[in-house]
Length: 211
Image (tube, rainbow, N blue to C red):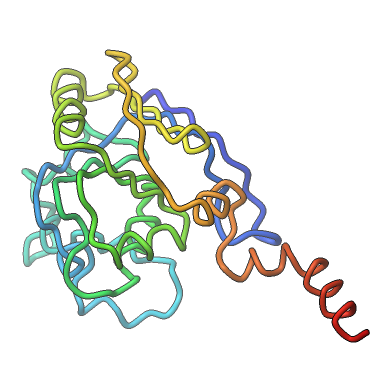
């Protein structure tokens, strides 16, 4: 697998890896209307920390009742790998469980590309360092086609420039993202980290307000 992932990691000062440019092969899952119960079944929601959920990502699709892997499911296919999940339309619908985003992150994905995301899932993903990238249905089809032609096809996701590029063809499309969430992703901040990054300004404002 050819993969290049630009990030900085320091658990003492930020909630998750910084995200700037991701160049990686991708895992194709062209299934529409994937809901959060399929991403992480309700019976695995007992834990309160983010670790370990990746083991049960798409659990009922990945494993038989005897815990043997289902050979026809894409995550069990060694042909495909990478830090990008390419999904069908309406990804993350259903209940608002943030554990779905935790499972995707813990498995190793750092970006999900689709033509439509459920709003709550999209917010949960951004809050923990997964970049949900919305592209047009036409461009999503081009990505699937590129991966079908070459399982190791490289997709580049450039957050500062807000572009997705299919390396093998050079085709590119822009995507939108909330400016506040973009800044947090680039810096590896969650909402608490963002406030802490401004504590000097907050303290100065508070002191000024006293006089």
